[in-house]
Structures are given as structure tokens and as C-alpha cells.
Length: 475
Image (cartoon, rainbow, N blue to C red):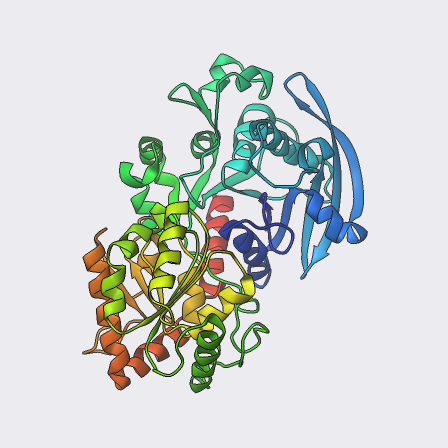
């Protein structure tokens, strides 16, 4: 069984968010199950600069995109046992950033078409094309319209994964002919509310549709979460499933993480406290009093639930805690936390930047990890926190709901704290329940043990993906 992952991000080559982590980890886990997994992605400038000396040239060919006849070079290299292919076109990919250009619709239409043309030049044809996000959404569309009757393409099946339905690839309908080269009948696959919607095209064209947690698969059938695509999701719900993401246990490992003051594991939890002390000292927090430390890492955006935190921030601080934040985002949120850091000197530390090293130190040094998202398709931060023995406090939505089980003092089961409604005082209640566990030593030891023992790896999820692929080939 051969699976070709089609993505615009994959660690270590390119990453802006969780997609890069997923495509950098899942193929390797699938190979352990006997699946032949490979990846194809754009050859960005940054990849050429860092890995150009390792790339092997395969072939070059032309890609037709409406009236255009575009060059395409095909390169490859092996990384951690996985074969990565790279689509080369300097006009489209020799740029400073991966996304955010006026011609993104054209750039990733080219990418989708180039991937399908590249299949003719591979040593073997995959059984399934696994696409992710709007940037590769045209692969199942072009396959359906242009390729499915060609020799070598008839048995190809497609999976499309929604990592975040908010980003759909919406463009003006003038690109239908000028870029996509589609007639009026074919355009129906992509048109939505008068615009071209790449993700909509993938939803109706793919053979199977997945998203990154079971709860998010249910949520996106409702208008509140689906950003206008709920009725399309409903029409295609028969092929939808949710499989929660995992994390790379080699990458996120407190026993080997070089960013930490002291390495530790679930067998040496006392060493975690040494990381807390070092973090507080370096961040300018008061080290004289041993108070619980609440950490946050991520984007300061409304849909991340930051307004819930700002609404009751003073009440949180009244509960005798220290607080540390690492993140950037909306200016008014950054200003709010800077002002609070000035007001609560020694108790609040705010770093409006991003540093992977500091993020690791917060995962290791904090007692609690606050993640009150309004919407969270899967979330990786809470999984990393569990891996580092830090207790998540989350809103029960999407992958947060699926991965965090509220701690029950009677049964001593559960690995975190959660709240259901989008309400600041309900979040505050969850924080206070967590603090009560902290001050009750026995329960704190139990919830920490449960966090450490939670399996957040890719193992179980990879088995589910392999089962999905097998069911598609059986049909």
C-alpha cells in the first residue's frame, strides 16, 4: 500500500503551524506499520538554501495551467527514512514566505496540477493521494476533471484532511478561466457564494474526508464552526471521519530536550520543579514564594479565547499564582498583557515574541498550561504539555475535548481540567479547581502521573489512518 502525502509544509523543511508537524511525523509512523509513505511538497527558497546540496534531480516537464505552459522540476531526498519529493518552479516558490501573496490562487493551482503531472515521472504510482488544507485542495478536483480517465490514474483514490476549516482558499471567480482553465460545468465544483473556494472543491471531489479530531468532525457540521461550509460538510458527511493528531515523541521529550535547565521524565518528576525555579528566575518572577505557575504559549487571537483570560485576569492573579505568557498576535492583546506585567511585577512575565526554546522551557517549568480556545481543531500544545507533565486547563472543544479528560478526585482519573461554555467565569472556575488540586498534594501527584502516562504519540492514530486507507482500497 503506497500513500503519497501532498502538503505545502513538513518538518523539518517548512512549517508555519500544526500541518508541518503532522506531515513531518505521520508518514514515519505509518512506515512502521508496513505502509509505503512518501511526501511531495513545493521546493521553497528556504529548502533550497538549507538542503540544496542533498537534493537529487529526477526530471523536468511542462505543466499546463489554462493558457500557461509552466516549467516543473522534480527533486527528491530521503529524510529519516521517508522519501520527500519537491516541486521546483522559481516563479512560484522562490520567495521569502510560503503564503500571503497576491497570486496564491495561481501558485497553488500550479502546485496541484504539477503534483498530478509528477506522478508520471515517479518510479511507482501511489494507491492513495492524501491531501491537506486548501493549498493542495485542487489535487482531487483536477484528478476528477482531467486525469481520472487517463492511463495510470484510474485506480487512484484521494483523502482530503481539514486541519482548520477557517482557511479555505477563497478567490475571485475571474481565475476560473484565466488560471484554472475550467468551463462553466466544471466550475460548479468550486463555486460558492459567487467566489472560487478551493476547499469546497476538495470536499465534494475527494473519496474520503478527514479532520484532526473526532469532536471537530462533529463540530464542523454546524454553522458556528464551519465558516460557511457546514451545508457542504453535511452533504459529504458520509465520507467524513475524525482522527486526532499525535506528536513526535523524539522531538518533544523532556528527557532529551536541550532547551531545559534539567532533563527529566515521568520516572523523575521531582526534577521538573528545578525547571520551574530556573524559568521563574530567568523570566523575572519572584522566586521567594512557591506559588503555582500558569503558562500560556501561542497566538494572541480572539478564537484562541484570549478575551476570556483578559476578562478575569485580575481574579486569576488574586488566587495567588504566577503567570507567564509567550506569544504574539493582536495588538490590543499584546498591550493588555504588557500592562499587566508592569502592574504585577514579579508575578507576571510576558514575552511578546516567539522562541521554540522558551516554549519548551514553559512546557517544562509551568504547573498548568492554559488553553481556553473558542475553536481548536486538534491542538498540539496541550499534547506537548501532557508529555512534559504540565496540567492543561482547556475549553472542551475539538481536539481539546478529545485529549483532555477532567480530573475526578473520587476516582483519581483524568489528566487535566476543562470547562464547556465560552464564558470567562467558567474558565476561572476551572483554574480554581486546578489550583485546589495543586494545594492538595496527593491529588496533584495523581493528576501529574496521569498526564505523564497519557499516550499522545502517533501510534494509535497511525493505525486508524492505515485502516482508513485499507478500507478505501478494498472498495
